[in-house]
Image 1 (cartoon, rainbow, N blue to C red):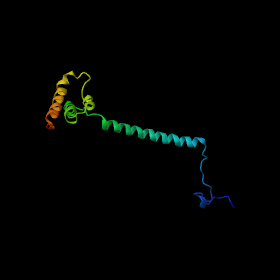
Image 2: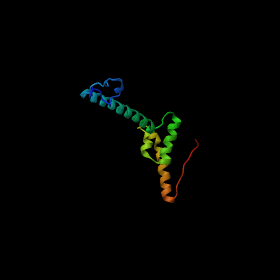
Image 3: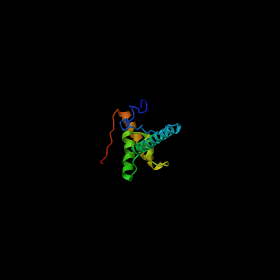
Image 4: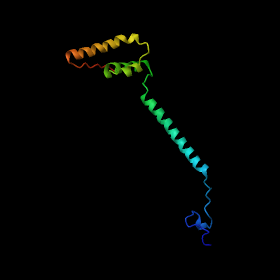
Length: 119
């Protein structure tokens, strides 16, 4: 009886050997496939969360206008301004001229002009 039963087997007290299926080269490939699927799924969730967090809110016209004004007059960020305006933004030229006038007066008089509006 010596050597017939392993003391490390889970069922050694029942007098049987543990029934483990043989692991060949496909066992490792299946594990890698499951791990790869989990990584791809996690990356997809992360991408959607990132896109939703960074995409500008254009859900309604008043929100888009508010965000445009904030980017133009408060943040003075032309990249964000372009997110809220059309390619042909000729009708918005007076707004850009207004900002340029504000910046010119700030330099000329060494002041800071703060703009705000109600929400």
